[in-house]
Length: 78
Image 1: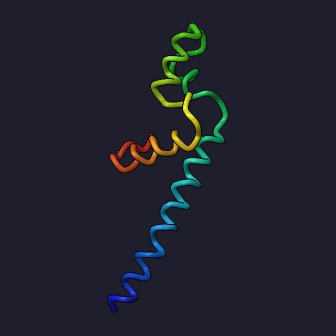
Image 2 (image 1 turned 90 degrees about the vertical axis):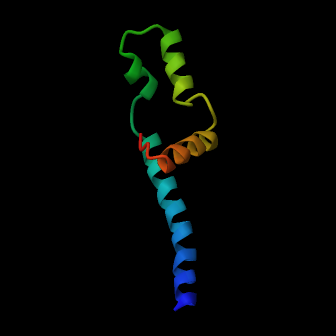
């Protein structure tokens, strides 16, 4: 029974990683710029850039995923 539990747990981890990558990837495919949406339509470029930095959109996609997964582990699903 213990071996069965360990095998199931071992198969669960890659599944959760794959599903988290899939969800993150689908969020990245949504149309529009999140920084532009938060700042508003007619905002100055400096304000939009501030939101891009605040949301880590100025970082590489792998780093964005790291921030996102860290937020998910803390309960922030946005």
